[in-house]
Each structure stands twice: as structure tokens, then as C-alpha cells.
Length: 389
Image 1 (cartoon, one colour):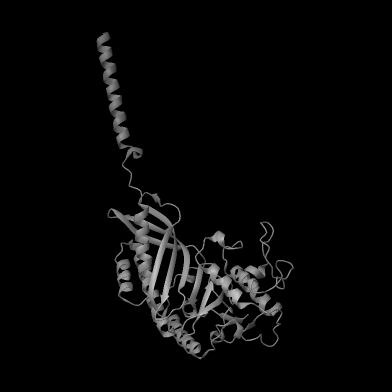
Image 2: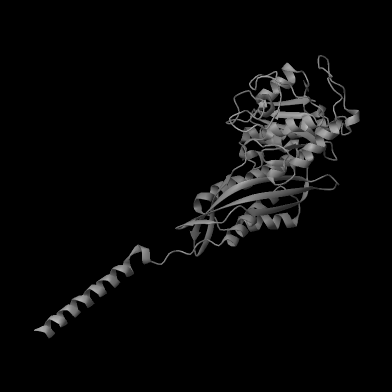
């Protein structure tokens, strides 16, 4: 009796053990998990894509080869139409640049990871900082460069990872990423490029600050401004430096804040007053909840009202062909700024060998971008303002 009981207990124990093993084996917690994404593999895929995309606007066999590699990169089905539009946008820009007399002979794109890749099931994400530099063809012009952050998403595919989405994090995306133009916009952009080239060829060579025209009628010559200092500040801090190296606290959208600091470096004096007043213009760097600067210091439409209407430190030019070194350009951005109001502020920091103005600005840290590209990307009726400082 005792033996049979012991045998029965052993059988029950064995059955329980077997059942537990079976449950554990089939449990999701014990199922084989997909391998996490390899950071280096994602970075290399992203580098291949951006290098090829950026090379579309560059002449030469090396650039064409980089573009072919990008076009053969594995991408998710949901991203293919987006990729095609992004590539076509750069094809359009290449043609517009040629009409404007702007050509690039080389491009160098580097990506720096920001943190580690994040994997969740069959999806992966990685954040990168892109720094791209374009070399102007046939001249000794200073390069055009920009730095911008992206979030990239990937989907697991055939044992690897397919690019599925790109989200640009700094400012309105087309400050660094061209958008495909519709037929009417493309016609307008091509016409603007031709006019820009003609105007640049006829314009005065106002690259020497000492030769910059004096203020126009009604503009107060309140100081002998140092335009060299303005440009020196703008070119130094438009370059890809760590954000904490900029000698002020950046705004989230930092374009007008950046230009105000450049103007101050050249002799613009601060004006005290209520932070919302259009007649005040100051920066203190205070911590929240105190305002760190007046609205006119960091807001594009507010700056315009202060500089043109209240202080009369600038006057409006008839068009881009009249621009001189250290002049300021603003433009409207549909879907970002209020209708009829500027949404971005930048400064002339150089000219190409054909006298195309080159612009430097934040929020994307951009140095010496040809004005022709910027006008082309905002040729859908967005307004531009050109100011003599």
C-alpha cells in the first residue's frame, strides 16, 4: 500500500513536471526573440542613403555612383514613393542650380549617431546628426555646409533592415531637405533662378564691408557698424560646432536669435523696454520664468517691425540683386509662419565667384548656402524681404 502510494505520487510529480516544462517551452517569454538591430549596420545604411541623395545635385561620376548605391538600398514599401519624391526634388534642384549658375563638384556627408539604436519587435529606430559639405565647382569659394538631426526608422526585412521613414528634427524640414515642386512651382523656381543669375551678374561687388552703401533716406545712421564683425560671428557659429559652444542660449527655432547676436557683434545697440514691445531689442539670457530676450530679438516678424519700422536701422531693398555683405534676408514659410509674415531670418556672409549671395543661418546650422536654392524651395508664392543693414 505504501509502495503503491509512493509510486502514484512519483507519477503525479513527473506529470506535473512535464506539463510545466511544456508550458514554459510554449510561453512567449521563453520564445526566441528577434535579434536587436546592429547600430553600425543602421548607421551605414543611413550614410549610404543620405550620401546618395545629397549627391544628386553634384556633377561627376563619383556622385552618380553614390546616388546609384542609395537607389539600390533596401527600403520598405511604404517609403519607396517618399524616396522617389526626395530624389526627384534634388533632380529639380540640380537643374535650378544650373540655371542660377551654381554647380557643385563634390559632396561629403558624415553621420554621427545620437544615442543607441532602439529595437522593438520588427522595428528599429536610430537618431543621427548629419553634417554635409558641398564644394563649389571651378572656384575657390568657401564650401556650403549644414548640420541637422534626423530620426530614422527601419523595418525588419529578409534578415536585415529596410529604411522605412526619415523625420528631420531641426526647424522646418526644407531648410535642409528640398521638397518636390509641383509644375507651377517648378516653373516659378526656374524663372527665379534665371533672374537671380542675371541680377547677380549685373550687381555691384559688395563683398567689401568698407564699400557698403550708406543707409538710405529716412534710415538713422546711429552707429558705424562693423560688418566684418557681423560676418565673422555668423560664419563662426553657423559652422558645425557643439551647441554648448555657441556663446548664448539657443532658442528651439534659433534663426532670428542667431542673427540678432551677429548684428550685436557688429555694433547694434540693445534697447531696453517691455519684452513684447516692438520698440525694444535686448538679450539677457535670463532663466525661465523671466524672458531671456525681447520678442524682437528672437521672433522673425517682431525683429522686422523693430528693425524696419521702429528703430529704422534697416531699409528694404528692391530685390536680391542689390544685396551686400551682412545684409539680412527673411522669408515666409507656408504652414509655419503666419500668412504674410516672415518665418525665417538669415544673413549674407559671402558671394559665389558669379556673385550669387550665400546665406548663413540657424535653426539648421547652415553656412554659405546659395540664395538660389532657398528661393527655389519657396517659390510657391512665399514672400521674401531683403534688408540693407
